[in-house]
Length: 68
Image 1 (tube, helix red, strand yellow):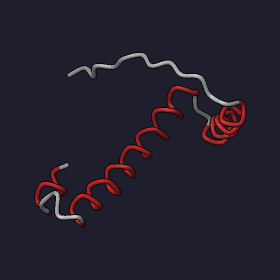
Image 2 (cartoon, rainbow, N blue to C red):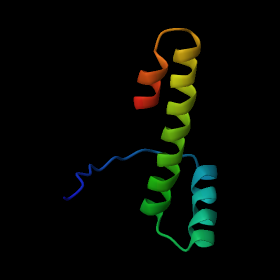
Image 3 (cartoon, rainbow, N blue to C red):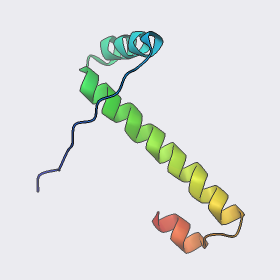
């Protein structure tokens, strides 16, 4: 099964670009791969924090939080 991907463009501060270049060199990887990897980690972290907060405030059951 082929993954569906969409192109996303954004402007980034020079400091982000400099950091990306350091990571690309350290990981010996291209920019797209580095960005996908960083974004995937940021999304996982956000979801964990968000759903834990929702559960803690009684707006979501533990079962539903685990599904998300």
